Length: 111
Image (cartoon, rainbow, N blue to C red; front, side, top):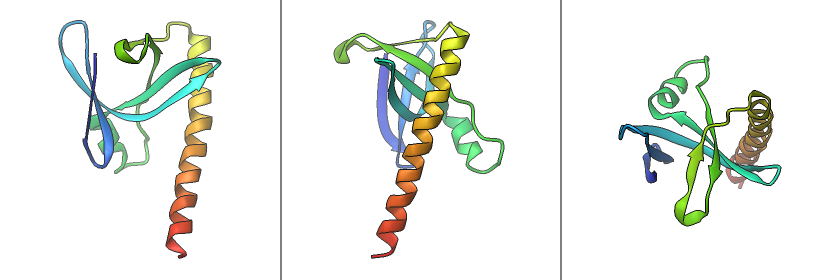
């Protein structure tokens, strides 16, 4: 089950409930398509906040989104080769997203 809240430093906080009923909080980084399939990249909310204050970066969790919009589920990616491919695609798309965001900020600052 996926529940979203927009209260996390202007970013989206996603709460996932695991098989044991534990609620885990993540920062939604990006939802993206790769080879006709949809994936979501998340960072643990507490680690994402800490990573902003250091140079070590943050842990990224990538899941495969299955089902329709009304009944989405997240599946772990068991195939290491596919996971490497999907992570590389995430890095490429996220870098483009960040570059576009920075460019928009620069354009807005020059007006």
